[in-house]
Image (cartoon, rainbow, N blue to C red; front, side):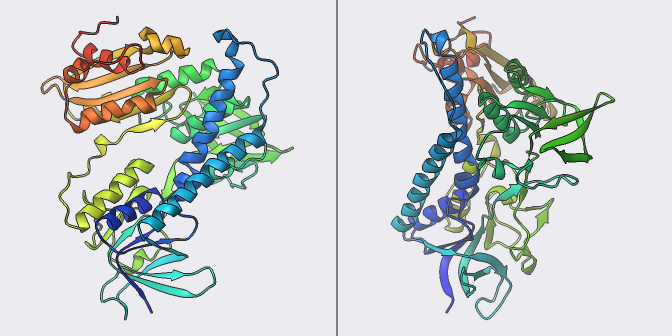
Length: 473
């Protein structure tokens, strides 16, 4: 007997389970089909475990620098096994929490491999899901609406055979039993720079490679340049504008050797491990989309602003549709999809409202357009910048690096983008994101009273700096 429901969700990651909870709140009978563990990549192989490791790395770096705060410590040692156990404990606790939310909201979770099927005896239209259960038996879920939330996986490069030991992706690196003495990281995007910062803090010799002209190619150029400068000051070797010669890769004496080209010259690199961080690929294969009229574009599922595919009763959210590929973006997309299928009034989804966070030391965060993007769209700009070195709380905390940059439309005064690099900016970006939603101007945000001493003062000063009204400098 088939399972019928109002909403079926193929994939139980952050976007999937948030969509399920929202649908349950609206009185829908919801079924999630998940082949691994509820919580998905973010909880088990991405956001949470990597940030747990980053926090341990940050604390280790602070403890080694404690003398600058007037505190002497003896025998500070890193026990990487304990770092990993702490990470696993955090993941397990949150996993239990997500399972509780499924029970609380009476959401049915079907464990198994799901594939969308075409019209059949179960349904006159495509969108039902055939599920292969762990015991080999088959189950069919027949929904009124289907939400595809199958996520993504690390992208590989031709010529580099990932073995999980010498050549790894972040999935493998998260489970290392011990730290390598040296590593080459291929890719200077978000994942690459986070691992470079973390492993450097843990004492690993890091070489970071990026094919484009700057780290964080999707972010504002000034942020990428500042992060490169700060990583280099910590001993990370950063190489941009380079070409990786994948055919040259070989493993000799338990080390990975590979050649690169930069500025017309060749160079050979060798390290104990190589970490591949060159983006992610949407999980759109082997899920039955060929049985539907759902359109795929450049490997991702095409959707409209309501998250509908080319079959209106089938929606798609999260990494499998491309875009920002962030957990909180997937959650927002899931809520958008459910509100639409339920006929709820809502604001259209706008990617410019989604903050982007990078958990290096120091952190980086942004929302809205970069300066280059704004110019390409024809805006006449006003720009304000303010350094953390002029903020009292930043000096108190011992973290004076970085700045906040505000980009505004000279004609309308609207905020077009806010870009930050410095201490705790992944928390501070929330104020800028709210300003975007409320269509605020720099003058309005700068006029709000920011407590002193606090890191938030840097936002107020940067906003005032757009019109030359900053008090601090």
